[in-house]
Image 1 (cartoon, helix red, strand yellow):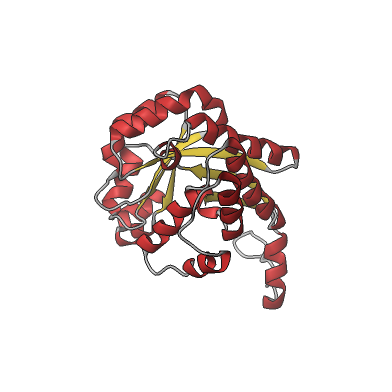
Image 2 (image 1 turned 120 degrees about the vertical axis):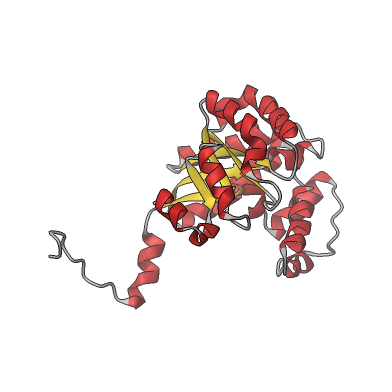
Length: 247
């Protein structure tokens, strides 16, 4: 015993992978649109009659070896273009949740970006109902799955407010709101008013902060948005007082 606590025996390194695979897990940072795999992109493109800028699944999979954010975003938006109907969003989330189940994920909090879809003319209701149906199916299988609506931070606060209002008829289908997309130049305080409204409405608050942006963005997420959880937060290591606050 050490300090009144039992010292656990060391785990043999060769046993660790199997132990980690079997361990129950919570996945708290999952962008559902980013989970689209090439096979499903092509299947949905065919189902919906969408032309893709890739000749084959192999060519698209090869493009997944992206080198920077922009080359990733090109694939991300080409993939999103095939998501048009409620069934598509349901299939997308079901594929992720089935994969998560094989890794013993027992609780998932899933980010979705409605503006990626409403900008293409897809109704808010289509997005939320499709994703929500997959979460309900997962619950029936014993996996707890919840949705978090994220605002795209490179767009305006007015657009975020309009997105929130469009989503409110479906507020029972998501538990919180977040902030994602290109961070630098778009500090959290840009969205102070819309997040104040979200807090009044009783939503959980999370925010991407300090992924690429400075520690000041993390302070703002905590003090201005009142975030309960910081997504990424890696730049916090540059600020000792902030590390203390987060701890």
